[in-house]
Amino acid sequence: MPIALAHIYRYPVKGLAPEVIDTVLLQPDQGLPLDRRFGIARGDSKLDPAAPRWRPKEWFVMLMRDTALARVGCRLIPERNSIELQAPGKPPCVARFDTADGRRIIEAYVNDLLGQRREGPARWIEASDVSFTDVPHNCLSLINLESVRELEARMDAALNPLRFRANLYIDGAPPWAEFDWVGREIEIGEARLRVATRIPRCAATAVNPETGERDVNIVKGLRAAYGHYDMGVYAEVVQGGTLRVGDSLTPPSDPRSRSRLGNWLRFVRFLARAAPTVLRQR
Image (cartoon, rainbow, N blue to C red; front, side, top):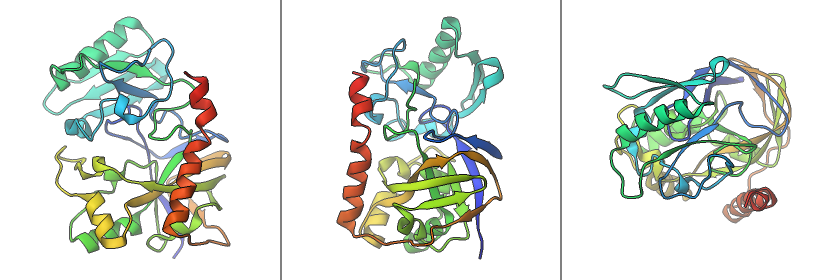
């Protein structure tokens, strides 16, 4: 069965709902354009809106603590430097993100949703050269839908793949085949990607993206079924090009499986590669 790109998603604001896109132009060494371009920083974080820098997810309002974020719709309007936020049961907020007045409108809307917080009001932050993904790299995340389906069967629970908040969702590959692609290159459409590492999952995956409620312990389910809590892989763009939904994926010609220890070491090395960038931002 051929492997195809089933869905493309970008998440303009870290922690909020995704946008569905049909086509995207990738550039070498960059992630999905405008993905995690913005974040909602905790009131007690030291992030400076005038000098943004990558920081771990704990510095931001996030799904692990604020589950209702999963239902806040988000639409980026790049040609107007604007963003539209839509919370259930609330009127939409449309404001410019490139003006002080616009950012105040966005922050007021977000803080009304979050309510009064001990750490103070949340703040709207725009990323600089490194987007606000969970890792300090400009990369993409990829999910194999067959892996999700097998996990569903093991856990006897319906799992919306958007729990894993990936950019690319593929269909047609055997379950967990993507793990054997780590350290190798794949081709999708016009682009060539290097699969860097598996993605260890956290408690945010317990949040149902449709209801905003914690209803399934994904981490526990992965550990019980497979002895790990990984789902999906990070991939870096080696050769840019256009991706379109329906494009074929060509897997590596020499996939290799790795030990659990080898996977962890590769993930640690992946994070360590970004250390110079993070240190320069201090």
